[in-house]
Image (cartoon, helix red, strand yellow):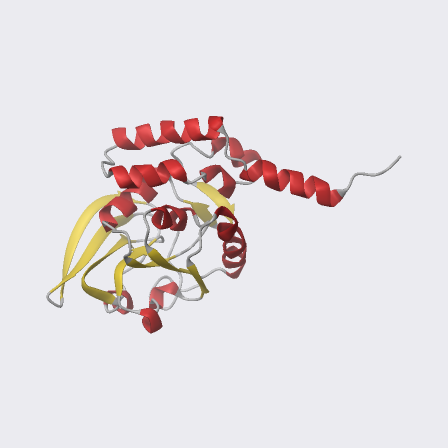
Length: 232
């Protein structure tokens, strides 16, 4: 009896995982409804959430939970952020199509996909080598093509600065001066700052060369690692 073809099995699993069917689109619409009820009002952000197939960022048993408004582990001690958190940060970042954006902490790539749906030019840095390689391989298959970098995102990316917007997707002990220095005039950064258990979401805007700070709700992110974060 002829044995199973492992390549065919792998390919079938790949196609099944990346399928975006009527049921999944319906679940995304339900998720968008929940986010609107929680106070997300930017229709462009909600439309981006409705387009990104969050289920493709999940593995195995967790796949059925893809459209719950919860964070889930993705390996390497990291998580895919709660959709509300992604929507909240994106809304507060106030991006416009064409903005040059730096993302510190690529992670699963879900936040990057949402930003790219909004038409930004995205540079994204991931500290963890395995996550970097995994996400760099996957996102282009979904049609998302940011500029990927592996390294210490807490230092920013001075070679490509200034940036219109900077988003930090990990909890920092302080606001890194290295990042605020890379903001363009009139630009802003959204960053969670606090201890390793809880952080306040801050928006830092550069106005006339000065930094204006706004503070929003508390969140819980994985730690920002690197020279200007929590040491690895």
